[in-house]
Length: 390
Image: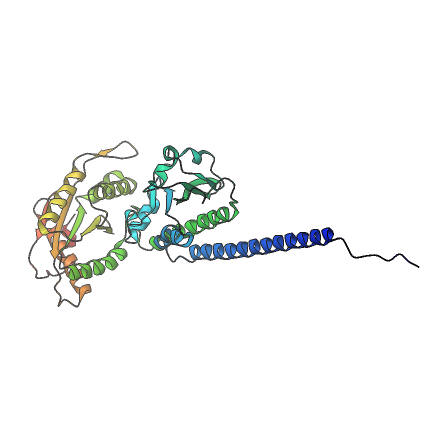
């Protein structure tokens, strides 16, 4: 007969039960980890999709700061961008946004010296907050214990970073995986490039290619908007119309290439005197218009005088060595829309016409001066006197 096998020892059953419990616990842990990773992946994809779907540059920057701060439940999120030519800042201003009005966004002419990590930052850096190295990356560094620096890269070059800050010292450490953050940085960089290109394309239809200023089409749109704002705020809108004196002589004596240089320099000198909130445009030929929101007649006249002096104060140095004396004549007019003014487009045309008449008066009085059109009765269109201006 065969050998009869007795029951397994109690110790062996206990070992088997313990091993089974450990296997179940490990499986449960792996399942839980897989679920967490799946949730993390889904949420990361949702965050990235939000960046890709931003309608404009300002909205994208807000989603990169306040949006990610809320989504990741962080104490701080800042975005630092290199903008040496102020290109991005100008695009925001052109879209009636101010870079200082987007919390958590900093624009710098250079990233040099901001943090030692930028020297070799090509992948996310996670670790403890160190004030000497990191305080310039955050608007309010007090209380931060750990941070994550996510590089923004274009064509292999670092142009900024998204900076996460937490009061929890264990939130970001060197031992944490950074793949999700690396992918977020790629998506954010791509989204920024697209948003900037879209803003440039949109602006091109409202931009004068010679001076880089807004054109007459843009002015017409903004004029109605600024009149509506003045009506809502019961404030005054001042219009400055500028014309270069004897500009035909510049073109005839030195050529149109030099004339173009003068126009660009005129635009730069005007721009150096006006506020970010003012609306400046090349109206056509050698004429420029500046709208001054929420400005009194007296303040508008003072600014016009300042612009006139800035243009005539020094000679214009051309690329071929010529030094040219250039002056401008300026006409100003103002309007305070009443609640009953319903035809804002017509009111805007009348404001331009009155500034035009004032400009003609300055020309007729000897040029290189400011003339102010006062009163609330719209003047007739000044196009009938254009032929005697130059």
